[in-house]
Image (cartoon, rainbow, N blue to C red; front, side, top):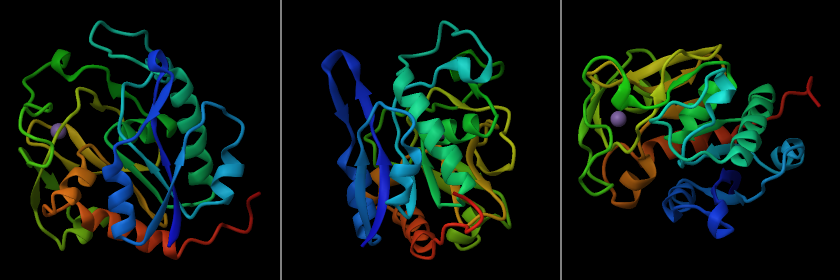
Length: 242
Ligand SMILES: [Mn+2]
């Protein structure tokens, strides 16, 4: 079993951490040993990552817009500043170590912001019409399509298919790409739905929820965890770093 760190939500008003078990089940199905990173502290990224062979950023609430130089707009939801700080620190060090990173939903936004990009604080206030990105169907039903960019790692994982259908529960989305990131999929309304980083062992962010697809044994979910764990199994920390 390959140790994978999984971040979780922090519900300050209830004094509890929270993680949908689907992430852990999906990791286990691909040979991963999930280690939930339930901390509010920064300064321990190296201690954590030293124990791990991959980092999974889970979904959750909104990211503090201060990280990309904006004031909060009316459509911005609840933020958890401790989680933002801890996850951004973790991602940056994981990228420095070329550790495999898989970022889901909120995670793709954290990954993009950690690389210097920014996000739409609220898609409903974006100019131009958007699809429904917060579906009313149950979480394992794919409801909108995404077009895959040919030649990307994501396209390879999906055997060169031109598009797939995904589930969708987000009101924020990647806007300006962070350094080194490339678009791997977008929805027909032009929203970036997946990003990756070329020349890395594995850096993939998806806006949808593959863990829910996996739990329901729907197509397109477990394939991503398999690819992530394959990369994690081959991970060797670069010798020229700490
Ligand atoms: Mn979507």
